[in-house]
Length: 122
Picture 1 (tube, helix red, strand yellow):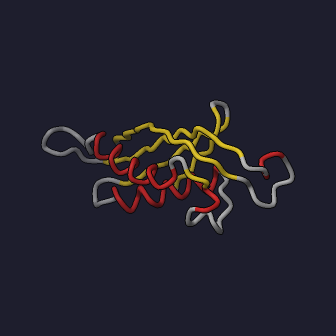
Picture 2 (cartoon, rainbow, N blue to C red):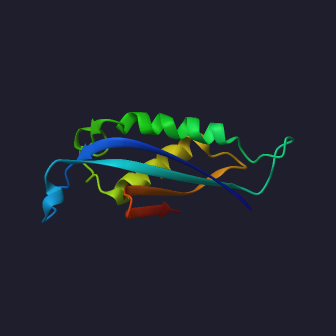
C-alpha cells in the first residue's frame, strides 16, 4: 500500500454555535490541512498519483474557504464549523475530485492550532 500526503493551509474565521465558551464568539484560525491518499498500484512512471494533482485538487477546496467567515459558507451556514466538520468536509470534497479505481482518500487531518488537530477517515 502506498500512502501519499500533502500539506497546505488557509485562513478563515468562524464562531461555534451552541458552544458554552469563548469560541462562540467570532475568531480566526490559520488552519493546516493534511490530505493522505492511498493506492496499491503504480503507473508506468512508478507513481501512484502526482503530488501536484493532490495539491491542485485540495487547493480547489481550500479556495472556497480561504479568508472567509465559515458560518456564511455552505454547508457551514447550517452545519457547525467545528474542526471535526471541516475535516469531513475536506475529505468528502477531495474524494469527489480524486477518487478513481486506483486512488482513494485515506484521511484528512485539520490543524486548528499548532497543538490541536482532528483526523477524519472512513
